[in-house]
Length: 241
Image (cartoon, rainbow, N blue to C red; front, side, top):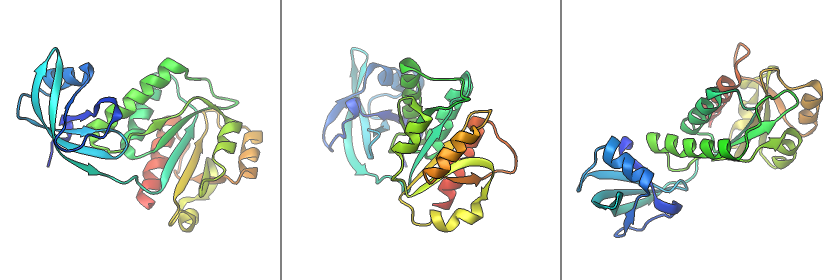
């Protein structure tokens, strides 16, 4: 089995066919040479973030870029159900930690959400950092499909944008327990869960979500921090899938 720590992202997101030699970008090359200390002939894993997993060997290095010879390529199907987390973003490094945990636990998409009580509204640079962190987390754990990070979305847009999801949930300490939702989750192809800010959703937001078909869901005994709630929700849903 390949060492998962020796994983790198396929250049430009292209799935490389067997027999091809590909160059890693400078950041990935630096990581391979200085952190992983790979040398010619060493094995590594290449990912494109969209299901292609390539077994490769280091073929050489020139100009600070590592060339890899692709030995074989496998296609990994996306996990079912597709799991989307629409969440308010917590302050400071807690947001970064949340992205990293969700990417490892198996969320397919994170939608940063602007709610009435949210205080962090990530813009372009922070979103790009989140996307990079998602790729790095996938690389570390050997995940074939990277978690997507959407643009900042208003609460109302999040409701309207996921009206086709098979199961729609809203995190609520007073909601239905997981056992009551098991039958609805069985065989679902897509699940969306809304996680509010530390102040919670307003009554108006909760009512709008209910009108849009979102079911209040209690998946923990106590009130959780935003990042903890996101991770717990994903862990529970993936365990039930």
